[in-house]
Image (cartoon, rainbow, N blue to C red; front, side, top):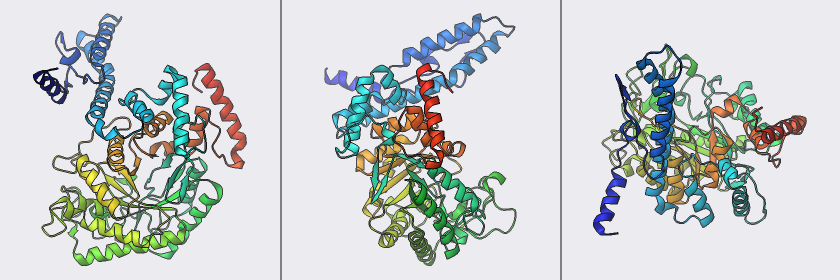
Length: 526
């Protein structure tokens, strides 16, 4: 290939237009193929988009119905638009895989090949099994040997491979994500939290997170948020930790945070991020910028405020040690106090804590170092970040790699990679596993342990993410709300019996494994 040909090819790759028209028809004129929506050629779905759209259009035009032409065309658009978006997202994932192939080059050949064939997220772990069961079984055995340092040679679903975080040994790669329950009284977790967290541990998740537990009364998001700023709160948490350790193999993580400008709001079901109708407490943040026009204007933190809040984090962590938590995560995402320092959208300071990324990180890193100084060395310490603000001029994934690097150098051993919620002006790009590429980028560039979150809800998702090396652990939130036994159910669904069921539930294990086996054999859902 000549240099000119190479340049032309590169330009086509880099400048490929992503088209998705708001409307696909006008009168009797209908757009098809690339005129209506494009899919980058790296995934090979452009022709498929056009052909399937043509088939769908023909079906709508020839079906027996009293609908007008305009109504038929509107139905055609409605039926096709979701699938078109899915294919476009797959094309975007594939494009980004190739554009970032350099950071995947150090993967071992077995994992590199798996990552390549699953790059679009439309080819999943189980669809590979349907295509070539021998290949996938061989790869699973290789992955098991790698995860167990050669101690086991079995074809294990990747989500059920063990993982070490500090001295803690996770039995699998499924984590129950931090989820605020807004059900504490004066910061004290109660019976609801005992049942909620205990049930998810009994349900097989390898890692359980508390909700964001606040380091001071004014650091709460709502009056119903949990705290760890007095001993009564510590003893209440200790009861739950003891139960989880006694009755499951789950590792229990404490997440500590401070609400910042997003504090003093109503319970979620009374109005998300809506200020309290009365009894508001004053809030503070990196800068005097409110979350929205309806929320309080926070005061800009002084150095004295920073000292006090840093010490509150440390005191809460020390209570977390007494409560028996295995891991600690510092919440520096979603526009809460520490996150507000990091993002240029929320940090407009003119002192040494504002301006450059290095300056904006100065205070969150100070808190991280203070936590590392008191948190036991053998227990892993990590941080949750927002990898992108989804806002023009805000944090981007390139910034987040440097943010993760700085936290690693300050003592963080894992990065919980979330995104957004920093600004009410955000414009997220949703989809299945939509935040996983952020976790992958940080993991592969820095060699750090990462936790992925964001619309991960099927066992196939977890298996594909772990197997491809996109993240080490998958955080599931909503799936754990509608199914506390999500992990045990996934094991039965996959025909894997190597998970611990509580003795009290074993008769249920036998039944669901039988039902799932019959479903797999008949291909009929139960």
